[in-house]
Image (cartoon, rainbow, N blue to C red):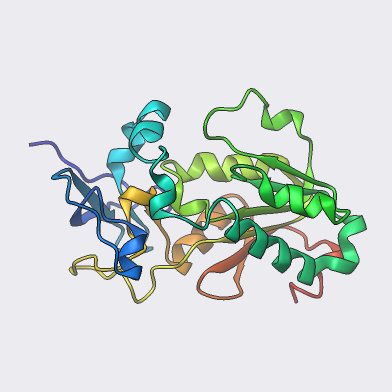
Length: 250
């Protein structure tokens, strides 16, 4: 029998199998919408040390697999907000936080999908670019230069290899850069020796990496980054706080 456990990608401790769910478990279950079962089992492993929870199966998937089974034409059915609603809301958050500082900001929206967020910001006079590593882009990260504000909204939970994500972010961070990102933390929602009932643990949405606050802090420390949270879903990394962001990071 294949051993489905592996070392934790965050802290390198031995993880343990926690639970198994059907592939069609989706975030829409929180709204009372349930997809038919597929009979395809997705195992989640859990780190007893840092509480990072992840689905190792997806590390073996190719880009074609993700496009065929997750990010296909039906994806909008289980994440209807990603095309328009979420980018608009996120643009309003950034404008409220940094409206008076936008002239000092070079912004990258990492994992920006259709580029809607950057489009909205640029229409308001920002200097914003978008980059999405999936599907594979002909544009290299090294071609983009450095940024002093990077956003990654609803990105971390979708990534099968979190260390590649962090290396990519570190590559385009200027010394004084603020990384703002959103992902719900698992604290209180996922526990050792318990079944996974949390709606956010949803393989059909591509939610395959689930973080505790401790795991986010440890992950940042591997890349010499400080970590802070504004809420259970909104977080930040930084090395040096930009002058224009000191009203946010105190």
